[in-house]
Length: 197
Image 1 (tube, rainbow, N blue to C red):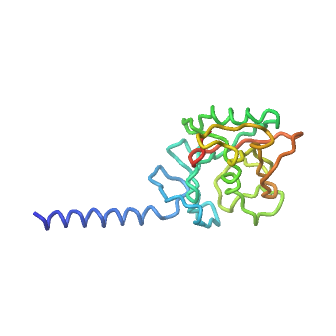
Image 2 (cartoon, one colour):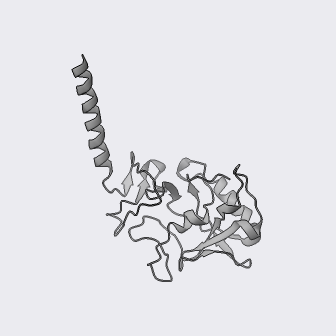
Image 3 (tube, rainbow, N blue to C red):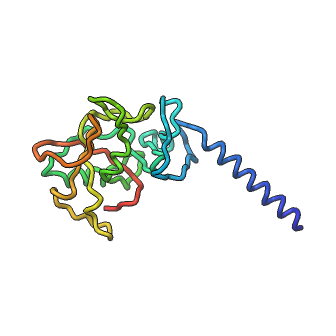
């Protein structure tokens, strides 16, 4: 009886290893599974859309969302073109909170660090400063709202004062930081990650 158990266990382990090895191949569109252990210390190089292990268009989300295998975050494939003014910064939160992209809710405004993770600093102006081979559509060389994660409490409750929590990431030149109160900015929503609102 014991040899049969060992044989079964060995076959299960070998099958799992073979499946995992097959999943590590680059795919730009997938119905799953497409898991990669997200780790901010890995760098998945993309050269073309056909050869990009970093981004996967999620076909089971109506191809409206993209998994970033470097960070584990899920992004809108095509961000909104609506603009939100500085004094209406909470409207940008509401936009993401009520989003149903891919027939799913649970979207939120990204932190400045999450949004900046999409910037490729080697792309020249006027951008958009996205990595080669990315599958995103309609991203503008413009400023996108982000939150400053340092100003969220440990319970996840937002400490919303415009001067401390509003930031932008500029996909013209890759700048990430403060805002100009006279301007309006775009919103690019995300799912997953550590911060909750």
